[in-house]
Image 1 (cartoon, one colour):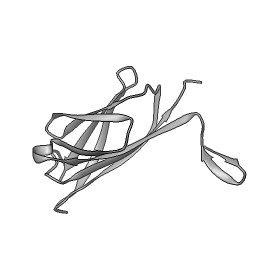
Image 2 (cartoon, helix red, strand yellow):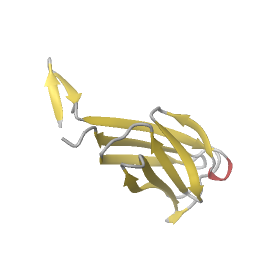
Image 3 (spheres, one colour):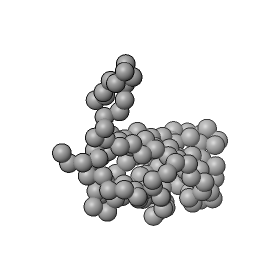
Image 4 (cartoon, helix red, strand yellow):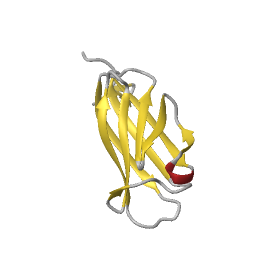
Length: 119
């Protein structure tokens, strides 16, 4: 839902967006980050835990993707469990149908929308 003010569409004031990306180092290690308001850690092969700096009660929508440096095969980003109380979201990188580490210089990126209150 959007609101118009002076003929300009603005985001819903009751939502918040968190966007960013990561360039992988060797063996899927966390490399260079873009964006603010979050941190990320590799917790297993192809599995990352995104930690938000701000509490949001509800995850409304998410989009994301993987850009491979070599452009070989099919690469997608899967979103797993969101914990509002822990401020975490599980992200998995799936390469050719299997959860797997990113290669060096591969990028993952995401755009998340949250409700900024429960009202």
